[in-house]
Length: 160
Length: 266
Image 1: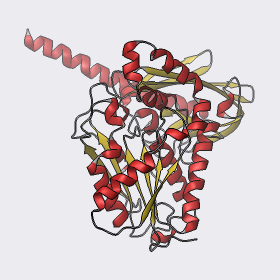
Image 2: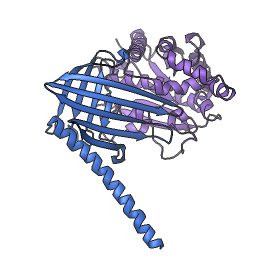
Image 3: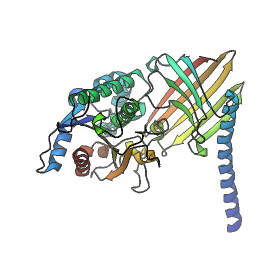
Image 4: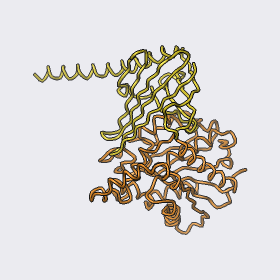
């Protein structure tokens, strides 16, 4: 009985680990294909729409696959600190931080969640859509810290 | 523009988000007392200065402060709120991509450069959210080719950094700050000492504290590259206080005082 249960638990754990790794890889491939990247980076300057004015007017979409294991896909604004990367998806994180990758009505959606503890963490949902000659990125960023939660939604539109 | 090592040192403090307004901030006095208490008979010339941004921040955070006042309106909330609740609330509500945050960073950078222009060696002590602003500004200065020649400390607007109760290890801050700005080839090292109390929830994001061993915060930024040029140490301290009270107890801790003493005298 114990042996069977151990095998079952091991099988579940292995499947979960494989599934997470699979999702990270899926996100990597989906983003690379969506932006048609060949191991390099791309940047698009755009304008914030339906975004709180405190974040400024201009935005920059950056997808960087230059350094293996440290790829990222972010939005930054005119007030983002020099040297910081902005909000988005980071591939230097563990596979289990990737929680959702899907194509929905032509939009690519990638979700990543970080947990520092039961009550503290952050999550990002990025939705990328290509319209005719335009790239639209919607970002929902939620930070949780003990009793507090803060959610920010940004929408950046750039010309392709 | 270079630093004159013979001039009195300046310890520049950047606070976290506090209750009250700019007039309530006395961290410069606390650090002065702490450093004097550790100096003994050593004749060290120094002064402390505080970069205040609370009034600026209050305007941007007013809706959250209203919420906190509401929470504090019941007896349990009142106990929690006394001095501490808004400290942690502002950590999560700190939107560091905003015009307010940019103003705070620019003001702090200007303050550092003002001290640099006077020629005084400057050491930064940053508490709580202030450590995120300090991190960003110091890295920005290192990136600027006018400052931080690795082999000449005289070109360094900041000589060393101490962080207290920093949330830099939390994913919301760490993930977008993947690496430190490298100082390049050379021999001189920029020192960063990060003090934390194991029960301080702002550091760990946990309700019941963090284990003392195996928990890396600032040390996550260490790399094998000799060109990085940063010496980084996480130093756990026992402030004698617990949880939110631990977060505001670093100012009187002798270990912090000794670390600061070591930083400004070596």
